[in-house]
Image (cartoon, rainbow, N blue to C red; front, side, top):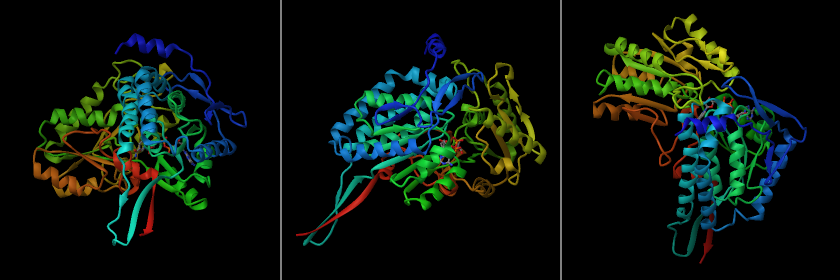
Length: 494
Ligand code: NAD
């Protein structure tokens, strides 16, 4: 990868973006726009449309019309497959430009964005392109006098609301399986990071997705997100974001049409390091990456390190050294390991957690403050607190920033108790060279994914989703397809 290519793309102006409804760009009905500020340097990048309820209405109506017309919903699976493959090809061709656009919008370091954003989005479209014509209905084992068939039908209009940390990747996790099953989609990106998803909508249209099948409304969550959540003609709503908004969506569903909801929410994921870990230095390196990449703005971030007391001092020192060695800075620089915090509001939140932890008695051993303020951008030093007790706020609440809590434990039972001592259940890791201990921990920890001797590895073949208050939906893998279909029984007297 060539730095000069990145720099050239980053120098280009970004044109103002409207809403993508029924295959065409349009301004918000009100004419309102939101300023897009880059967290790299605090400068204005462009504007996006600030959609209101009338715009959401238009987008849902377009999605419904497209669904009823059937050009996509009733197309042969082989036809849908061709289009999804073309989209994957186009994302791959445009990967660098998409990654740079996204980085300018949300500040993720480009080395990670390239893999996690266009890289992952292209793979996701390809995975569901390949999967969609391998999904069969069923014939039930009934008595011979009847035929019971189980059909899978598209649900109709899918609403998708996504966050700012990996917009293309998470957007693709929703859009690709929804389209694969024949649905129409209304997508609401985060107001903090909409640009790459707006370009994706255009790419989809260029690749032959019929008009109205994918619509994108941008704007404030409490306005256009709420309108989508309350809409009576959205059949299924898939969401990735915070628990607070997840709760609101449950209310909106109850107040409107009881639409089916799938919520991918936050986490406070435990990373459990036993004294018998195969390689402590490697464990520290991977654990640091597991919390500090994308400056901690990762839902599965291993934000709580639980470490066996006999190696506690040594391991905490290794983590502090890793944090201090991290290259934080301009996310468009290929050498940067941790980029910007996506918004000033989020940086203020991160600072608040540091203040609270100091007040509650956490021992700061790395970072702890805003850095690079002279750039005008939003940067925070990778931060490690030792001696964090389970009662402290940092053990319980998600920071969504580069702040790591270290807590010692004495026995395996203690480790399990501490790991599960959270309302969340998204991800976890265990570092041990004992096979039986690894398997016991996998069974005992209440989380959607438990890594062993690694952190964060996964691909499209396995589901990602939480247990408990980390949510109820699963993105990725064949399991995700179930969210986007209705089962229908045909009962036929022979
Ligand atoms: P957020 O909940 O603030 O916003 C998410 C989306 O919801 C945005 O598009 C926002 O505009 C919209 N929204 C806000 N208020 C709304 C409302 N009243 N009605 C409808 N929509 C509304 O989350 P965020 O700050 O963008 O992202 C961070 C959160 O997302 C963290 O909690 C993180 O853990 C979580 N997350 C989870 C996963 C996962 O797979 N489980 C992945 C990434 C992020």
